[in-house]
Image 1: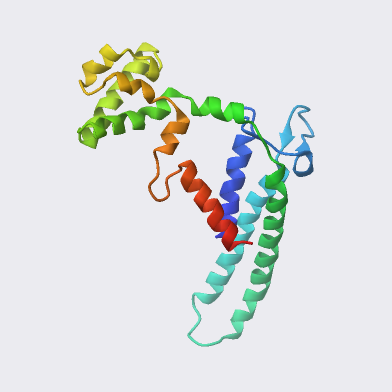
Image 2: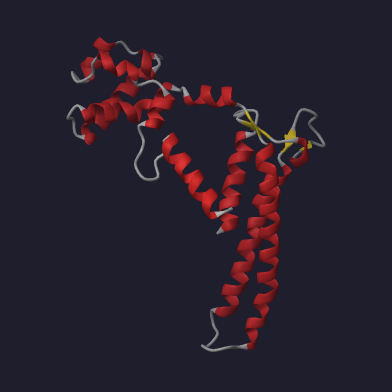
Length: 214
């Protein structure tokens, strides 16, 4: 399970470090230049960690396959679990050590992230919730905002630039205060339910894990 989570985190970092995203940049200590493309920086440690997860899964399947047909109580076949177990422990310890050293050295491109988070279509759910707060059932609000998004795409007009009179054609509940729904920070701050990504919740989780992992 640790390998699973490290693999998913590796995949995120690999994608985010690509030119298309440009959200993060690996330090020279944890990446290398491409042997073919001079401009390319390979996220080696993240890729290798992602690959090691296949090895961990293989070890698990080895043990499960060994155990599946054994009768209850001890059988000498179970000696076969040692190589797989010890290899998995060593593999995950090495991966965790690499990540503990690699993550603090990541360079974060805040400007690229903020630009991506400013896509007006990201606030479509906020628009639906806006209508719900004014008394509309969510199913109906979802449908209305879906039509509004389709109109935005069809007319090549960003969602947050559709004029209020036109929005009122979709629902009279839209009012002047709808203009406030276009800020990522405000959107995140409003999400305070358990597991939601408000800054307050994230800070609480960071503090919780710091206490558990001194």
